[in-house]
Image 1: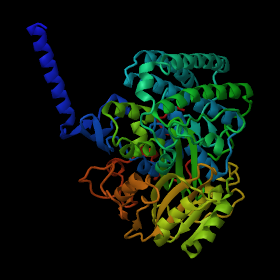
Image 2 (image 1 turned 45 degrees about the vertical axis):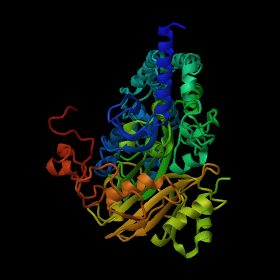
Image 3 (image 1 turned 180 degrees about the vertical axis):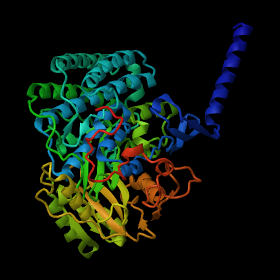
Length: 388
Length: 219
């Protein structure tokens, strides 16, 4: 052995010894601030994490950067004006936010929208769901280092948004529903265009399935990461794909059918693993189920009026009702209290993201730092939906 | 098996006895009002009872009932019916359910919604608190998810939640004064500038048809 070699191996041994020591040394607890601006939080959300080396020991979410006081604002607006507000809760699926509010007002008034309206509402809700999930499938990849799927999913999402825009005039904030009906009928040629886009979305799902979910790095980063046990999830009110990935077949569309979900055939996608991978995979399959629903609705679309007979001035008789819907992010509902008149007396907005995020302090305790991003991304929350 | 609203309220009456103050199945929603003292017990009953099996916590919030500008609710709707009834056909407002009745004002209600993931039914639980000094026990022991909802209830309504482990503000800055969702808390924007100009919904006279174009507005 030459002297150089022996020197090298000696220094290597010394390094090894150092490394050995470093592992055993108690690392000081550090406070790491994540956000308020971070791509994986989809809005202004801040986490104060206490970390011990690579391990997160405690997490404190800080909310309120986007709190706009919607519940207060609803108390000084007419029912028609409120739909414009609630579009901005979960801004990726603005159309879906209108549905439970309008349904709750219709329920108190005893109005039922005509069948054509119900079908169009269902189609548009599902289109908004697809647009939201396509953003997720793209952005979740980015958060874990896979850049390519994003461009593909965003391209097809644009087609879905074009459809929404062709009907409502708005890509994100349609403000299209009225008590008892909708603003306008479908534009000519919509049915054919929509069917073509559904084929594109299905094709996209197959591609993402192979590209992202078949990727080894992606699987390593997500499988077994951030497992939400079923009982914990339910206790925190976690909903949507997040709870279905934990093995609970809860879907408002099937449990408490609204619009025409009792007339279409679709599967409630569940998984038993409860980890980040399962949550993402559920969303992918739900996108496919969603195109299935749209195709059936397009086929069964009845003709008829797009507005029920409603008074000129919308006055809701006294009453209280809670109406919920299955939004892309989970269960969304409005507890509407009316004392008569044109203005709601109190509107409690139950958003999916708020409950989904409230599980974070419990869920993130003890996870590794890189997993934190995977977990945040896989829960898929929108800050407008958390802060309200 | 999902229970009908009537069966749900009956189950609460059986299980909780005199703690149940009021029940309602108006609009197909099971509502159970319990005494403030039995608040946590009622939630625990909803969760633990085999038939109810409400394992999923949905939300928790409050409603403040005051005698405010809207005036008497019934008179208001009667007026409205007189104003609009002549030209439009009012649809049947009440479905075939038991009658809805609001609590006598002033009142403060804490409201929680819990549901069953296996039975697919849900129930709205309420407790009436002292409107001047609302105090309620924390439900975190039963549903861990009540944590943030109770923090919101505290800052927005000024309710004292006894036994909350972390009673700090959730949304509002620490130095914020007042409780924004109280009826007495005026919306700042509306105080400075009436909204939106001459179509403020609060001031619009009842007999003005909303379709009539305003001067200067395109027809």
